[in-house]
Length: 270
Length: 187
Image (cartoon, rainbow over the protein chains, first blue to last red):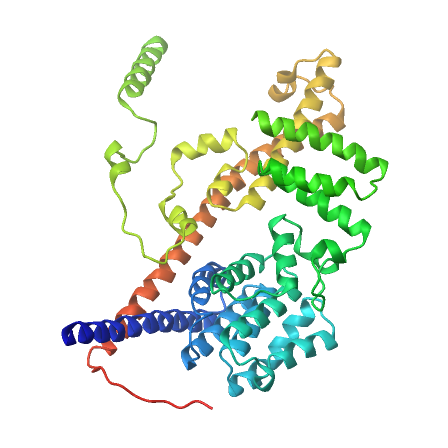
């Protein structure tokens, strides 16, 4: 029994140090290429570093993780991915807070946010919500905060990352807030990220279709029905069409229903 | 003499087409497809595709038929579509010129051979600019596309080369470390 325990502890130490060493390599590499400032090279290196970042979200705080996220954010900045740069700055500040780094990145953080068309109040909000004193205590709550601020950036380049992060949190049986469920639904039906702004309400607890006005509801139904028909989910499309018809549709939308029937028939044949 | 040369050339082309798999200059065997390459575990599919691609002589002819082919191969889709549009504009210009010359009852080859000086000046420009667009877009696709692919391949090789070296350094620096247990307090 003791033999197994020793093997387990040794393997844990070995694999633990191995995982650390991989992040260290990625960090050293990012630091090296950021120094060279070759945009094309940095651009081609970012996807690999993002993969490493993906598995660090639920990792415990460490100096190396802090430095890695900070360096990744700088790389994204050089690669002109402003939204990703801001997102990784936010992630670093929430998950791996470090006061000395916070002082150095503040200018860059604000600059990136301004370039993404946020005003001073909004950027202050991002900054203040991610200061060490106002951070949630548990990891899951911290991830929720990252999701909250990440979805507020409204960038199509972040959709995949946020969706993946949200799914990981859902797997931990965490009770997701209503705004996330709405965002997820709108993402699944392939509504553009910029259009989601007018459909999301971060304060409300009521579901999307109970909260939206008739005009917006019709638009969401239309998008969702088209999506489910395309994906051959005819039963779900039919269920939504029943609700859609209840919304006193204008003549153009009624004509659209006929087109939807033809498209459904086409999809059923192929 | 003329007949002898024609006979020799015909014989050469017939025999070379019988024995050649394609008209590529690099030797390639069917077994190449069976070789499974060693891939770095963090390598993305796109990077692998970039490294395994090469611009060969066959691609020259493909690029003639499919405008922007080399750029599409180098995953420069935006530039590829720009070349495609440029080439289509060139073809459209030639089509206009052809329909005009046919309407006027003139032979298109007369102008090319320099026998027809009576042609409208605007149509002369149209023909010249269309041909320039077609040829220059083809050459640009070929030369720039090859350059872009090579540049991307260099970036990937550089990236993994440096990472392998860094891995090695980190691994060797850990060699003399002994496992230890420590307690840390965070407030």
